[in-house]
Length: 485
Image 1 (tube, rainbow, N blue to C red):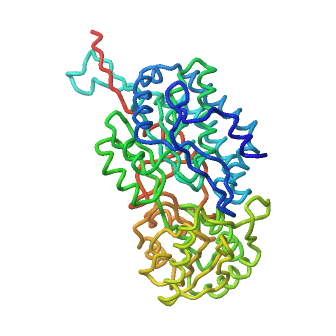
Image 2: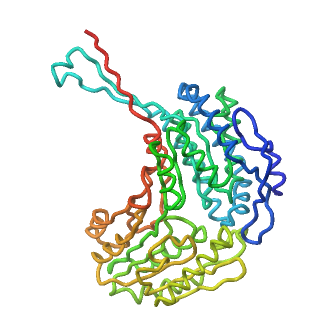
């Protein structure tokens, strides 16, 4: 399907207010694999951001007062519309992200689950009674609390999973009764633009204001205008730690939910199933071409099994397919842009200069970085200390599992980590000791169910995603006390 056909399915401009706002300029979205143009996307500005925020504020009371059945119906209708168009969305995601088709298929599936889960949570937003008579002064009083919408929500998504990440901002906000203004990453606005169109159509079909969900594109100045506006009740951001920390400062005292970077660790205990653990390194290190915040980056292996494990990983790397992301069998393709590709190349070169060695893979073919396994990577180099966001896995030996926990924790990040072991004691020690938001036993650290609480500690962020937990973040308790006698 030609992208011009896709773009004709919604009006030109940005979905702001009750209609569409034309922008004076557009930006060419290009296919990362070969640089060919995909489509021209509307380019927003601070002016459009202000218009959208005013429109959101204008309908905030209306959206908060929508019946639960209406909010639920809008989300389910958008789910059904997206399901009917899933192949089109998959192809569009491949073209704007450069991500392999198999990963884009997973993204659409997870987006559908997230919409359904948010719709189901609408019926579970409730409060409790409170025993007021624990003190004599409370005799004759009835107390209860409920949850009310926090207000206008600004959701800012990353480029690597643009459709899914936007949905994790938008769907819980709508379920909670909050109007939401979404800003996609500048490189990947198209699928999110289409999703918002489907949601607005569903809203109008069910008697709700279209402006309950809006989209504004643009650069960092547009993002700053959105998050620093005092009309905003909460900001939800997914992206780099540096940008997230700046948003937190700009937005204060507005509530901020941050899902930031990581350099996820995978620990291999001496009693681990080495074949399954090696499979996990390949599967978890190179999906989405390594552009995932919980992809395997640091592999920490107990010394007694280190050599055997390294051989297994090196052998399996030979089966990773590198090439055109439109092919169903491709595992790794181009990164989002040349700047990212060059940065990853530089980080690998710096690690090698510091003493790291290439175990398998490596090199570059045009826009493609071939996946690489590095060993003996020291502290103090970016591929170990920071988030590489590319097809790079680093492996290091340690004497025992307890030291592996220490090494994993010596990071400013703390999103997910995984441990491979057949020992129940080691598994529970991992849950106890690892300073991360999620501990995954005998599975990749990149495992995420879209209904579980998801988020990190330290520089990996604050707050939790997953519809149930995001709704808690986007609502506030309101207490009622009534004297009845």
